[in-house]
Length: 116
Image (spheres, rainbow, N blue to C red):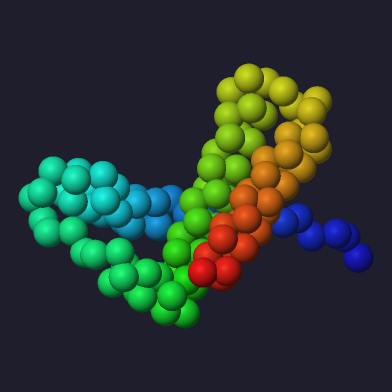
């Protein structure tokens, strides 16, 4: 039996990460980077944000957002190095470093989120 390629799963994570990054990250950046600091919207107090962050659903959503964005980056960076810079002879090393970095970043995000 031939070994199956993980390529469809990687493309799925790439597209899901692109959608999550396109829909959720701009909203969070606008709120926490522009609207709250400039006083356009009243900022929630620390205790309220902490209570929202301690809710399990919030942790899962933020973890999923981090995971998908990291795998989106890894796939895009892999193909930038592989096709853009023509580093086809280093395909295995590039894949291991890119996706390994995404896994390590996801584990770090999980540790930070689930310790709160």
